[in-house]
Every structure is written in C-alpha cells, then in structure tokens.
Length: 258
Image (cartoon, rainbow, N blue to C red; front, side, top):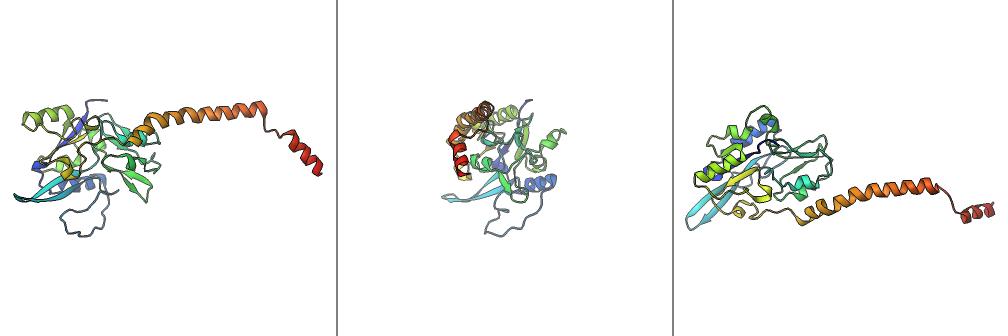
C-alpha cells in the first residue's frame, strides 16, 4: 500500500450547507429519493443505497442556549475493518492502495454480514440489486489524481483530504489535539475534530469490533477453511475405498422379497 490517505473533518467549521451531499450524488450518479419532512432541517434522515454521505443535525440545548452539532455521516474506512473481516465473498470488500475500503457490487453476494459487523452501522442494502453500498472514498477520482468530490465541494475547508499522518500533524500543530479516529480501530480513514463528546454526535465513544466478528474471523473461518476441504477429502477417500455398496443383509432382503 502506498502512503495512506484519509479525511480529516473539522465539525467546528462545518456550516451544514450540504454541498458534500450534492457533490457525492453528482459524481457517483446516484438517483434521487423521495423524503418526508420529519420536523428537522436534516434531509434525508438516513444513509441509503443512493446516499453515500449526509450531514447529521444534532440539536443541543442547555444553560448556554440552543446549539447545533453537525456530523458528516459516511463510511469511516477503518484501518481494522470489521466489514472486511466477515465478508465471505473474495473481492467484494477490499482495501485499495490508498487505504480506502472499497466495495465491488459485482462480487457482493448480498449476505449483509458487513451491515451487522460495522461498529458505525454504515453499509446499506440495495433491495433492487441485492448488494450493499457505501462511501468508497471516491477511489476512481483518486486514481486520476483528483480529490474526493465532497472535499472539493466543501466551501469552508471543513473536509480535508490528504496523507493521513500529515493531516494529523497539521491539526495538532494548530492546537487541535483530540482527533476522533486517530488510533481507534487501527486508525480511521475518516477522522473528526469534534466540539463535544463523540456520543453527542451518535458516535461510539470507544468503537470496537464486536466479539462475534472477531470470533468468526479468528476461529470459525480458519476452522471452516480447514474442515470443509478435509471433510470432502474424507468422503472422496471413503467412496473410492468402499464405493457405493449395499450391505449383504440389504441384498438378502431384496432377494427374499422376490
């Protein structure tokens, strides 16, 4: 892998203009979807197969009055990606040379294991194509030396894209020492500078891979990979050794019936 690239999103200067949402839909040629007014400026209310990224609106009220928290929701491209651990289809989820976790719909079987395993509940299932979808970090733009569409469209510079280590160093040099995702889950490919605790944005304070996911990858999958071929080999050896033979008693029973 070449130098790992990443997003660093500074929520303190995000204005929720949603240019990133529009740019993402435009570049990926994602269709429109009908939505309903749910009493919030947030629209749409959730990610979907035709919405890879969106701005989440969190209303906060307290002693200092009313306040907004904004969060860009998307795949966080974990360094230790649970979705890749559980995916049974080779090549359906893979890491490209820049560290992005990319999905290949042509190889996806629609098992939804990644949806269950993701600590951030990001992948969405497309009922029409029977495959999952999510942000792929505009890998097709990156390959052409272009930055992701959302970062290019952001008018305030809240979405920065570049070499991961350089982004972290730059933020800390600016006095922004607490970076969500710097070390979590092997280091996230989409990090945040937050002005409140992660849970206030709906993010897990300490994201972890679920125990069942680790158990499957570390124990069940190797056992299956060894056990299935071993079982087939044993059945084959049994067949060529003994053949499809009936017992003598069964033969005698048929003879007597005649």
